[in-house]
Length: 433
Image: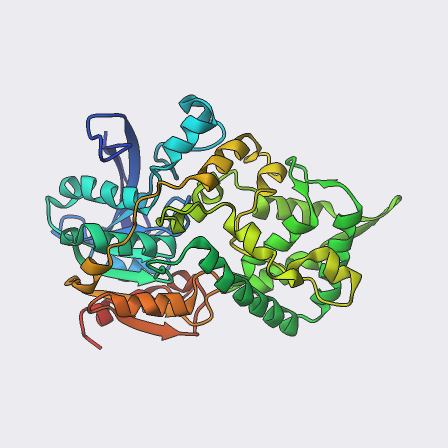
């Protein structure tokens, strides 16, 4: 049954679709996709073109907007919008520690999860497009990993697209995960340096917290083993528009005086466990490095191996001297599968995915060089998550792609910049500016 309901200024409709788990075996096992259709309340009966939104991640369901928040208000001026929960996320068939044992053991789970990359998401979109649009091509808006999916879409099924808009999500077409992280760690260090310049009092606060964690066994209320490395990973906040301020406010609440001496406060621990837990998006941890795997080489815990090339990120060494503690961000490490109770049962599955070598190519450089789909991309000059140089190299490789390179926004610019960002990119794609 299709259910429609209202929010301020919009009408929402729940949509569900059945697609093959493996699109190469269309008669085999199927999974369910969920998407939320959104249309402006005064355009409900109009015949509008469609825009499908591909969320960042991997592993996150589409935004749960209220009314016309962020970029959605601009989109609803001319489109019906489909907010797709990509396979394994949101209300689509879930993939987590509770459901994956239904597949069998770690080997079966890893084989199943190999079908949850950008190439499968693109084929999902094509599988449901005929039902949604009647066969007409649609506009795609891809944020971050959704942009990776969009480049895969342009590579494999450009006939399904009328326009492509990418925000903070132009991937390297050929970089191995090692190359991605060798470029990432210096960017992260620059973000940490900028944070300490803004909030110099946080240098001492971060060192005190890390020292406490190096000398005490701390388990958060949800069972998460809170180590110094886990604390450093909170630097993932620094990639968003308000992230530096959020990290600052988090650090100032860290300690409370107790009869037994200083301890990490309940308020601090409560906030930290919500930031560190992958319970709501375990696919992010499981297939994140697989986003970059396509050349027959294993990812082999790339972020962990490459981190060893940057000893300034070693917490113990920083505290042994007078160096500021460096945070990390958007990198997955094997210790996370020991610390996080949402990931612990999936440790062996993650190891098998890290060792996998039979990944198929995600992008087609020849087809991208002959691209005819109008496409525009926002490249954020200071983006902590996606390397600017990699993005611009890819931009030059896609025929007709127009870039908007800006330092006005961080990686989440399509959220913080809202309608203005989408309006600029649609105009760029249409050669209106």
